[in-house]
Length: 488
Picture 1 (cartoon, rainbow, N blue to C red):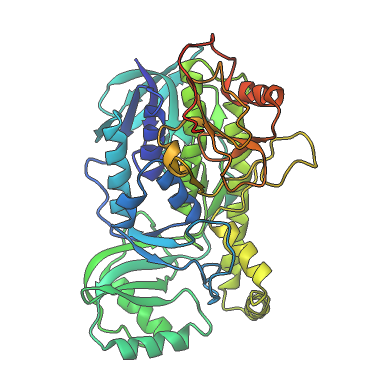
Picture 2 (picture 1 turned 180 degrees about the vertical axis):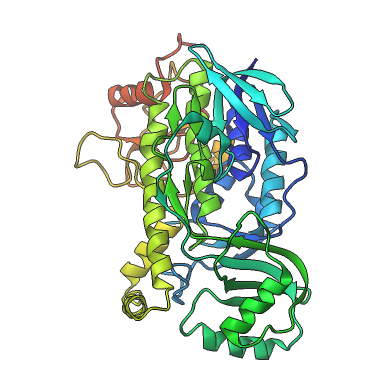
């Protein structure tokens, strides 16, 4: 019997598997596809996702496979420079082929001990008080304590669970691919610049080795399951730009729409949803992969706590309570971005106005922080006058022990104490303590969750104990083993 079965080994499923393995949870990942995805679509990893990679020691491995650029100009493709003063140790965006991200995250999960089986499609399941029985297409039946659907927008798990997926169907379809062209870059740049005066969805950008990434609005699509052809691209380019630029020798071709849907629930009993199985939206701002990976970081330690037996009664419920509103906000901002890219006079007028407003640094920063997920503040309840940092992620800091994020590789909680008077006795099997009076903080001490969000701020041992119990369960019997990696 497994502790957790995950349906789907995309970025969300692989990340979740790794997070669970940090806590010695027995994980099986079932991927219905026999071979890895071959489409070399470029995706974006935003500031918050790169921070999470740093917290698990993956950042260098990820950075060397992608192309870094500033974070400006990513809201509705409005060409505005990156805002000054972003609250991030390293404010950048990383463009990277999706198959590379998938492979790196899967390798990380396997290195930690997760089992991955390809060509295994989930076709049914039944849950009871003790676990979930999962049926595969080949007739196998497996047993697990929990099942998580990370199986994409057409999620079998979500459909079998009977969870509603309300929203709007796709209204605008777009072709995207990489291919070679038959005309000089100067001619391409001039033609595309003219078209983008009124239609921001058109892109022909060089990606290296004579290959261009091509994005062009599609006509009505009868069957989105069928991939487009090179002639579809050439035909749409001729209609939209007046020329097909001599496109040939495609690397990959795909089609996407702007459907927007959000699952009504993220959890029913022992079955949960994450990533595209829980939410889909237009690709405006490149937020999709990031949203799913961040779901996995939020869910992983909480589900592990449930499996390991130390989770407080309501801990697993906070996954939906925290992540559902985040997804709703992403759906809204992508809806807005799609409207701003419409060719209609009204949306174009709003776009011109917003372009002017984004010259104000505060407006620009607000929108970029929203897109890159560094503006998230979870509602932990309590005092309305609580410090602004409570419920927010903590940027990386220099400590005597090294970088803060380097201390989080194990996926444990962390108390960062500038007073030198606090302890995590009773929770040292789940929470580390770093005493550092030199830490660049404006607060005496804080409690950091495994996903990097601040769960408590203060200096009272009594208050800290209450919050440790809230997030990490009842204290264990005191151990002779010190729970601190503090320095004098």
